[in-house]
Image 1 (cartoon, rainbow, N blue to C red):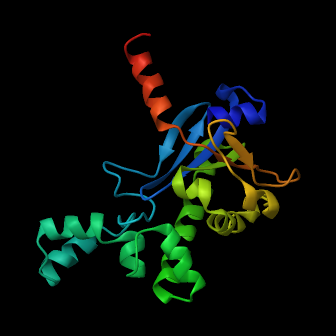
Image 2 (image 1 turned 90 degrees about the horizontal axis):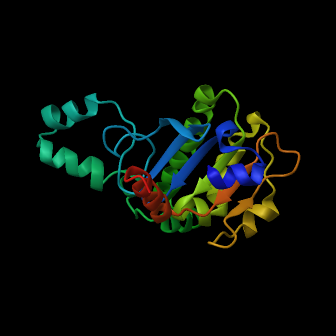
Length: 216
């Protein structure tokens, strides 16, 4: 959000963004004025988006169904929801998004379903998080998938065209970010809401927060 504010030429205190941090673990966060006001993860990372092996949002009654009707133990349910669900469970192929995209290209039904669910859930969360923000200044993609999968970014943004988003496919395809070039815009100048790819730097943020905590 800080890097986006620089590109938008706005103070972080007046910048509202939605960050999609996408990797084997994935989350969406609504950030208003530099502060998180909503996030897709709950008590544990299991809530929210479909992830590599985590199920994401589901009806809690599924747990009772697995235990009472199918004979699962609670330990087995925990293992299934955390380690055998998500992209892996839906596709029955892999938890790696690169493998899912390859499977989609090859016509694999499970991979196609997993990709469609992943993108739909993500677009739905982004749209929902415009509510707590009121005004959306940018959508940010980061993390291993967010930074490297042009096709996934396109699929998500196409579902959000009603927000006035216009993707620049050339910029989207060649968007590359590193520690020197931290931000890459992937929408047109006419896009009502810009979308940016931003290099993640979790270690730096941990260090800054630790320094703040000890008063440095």
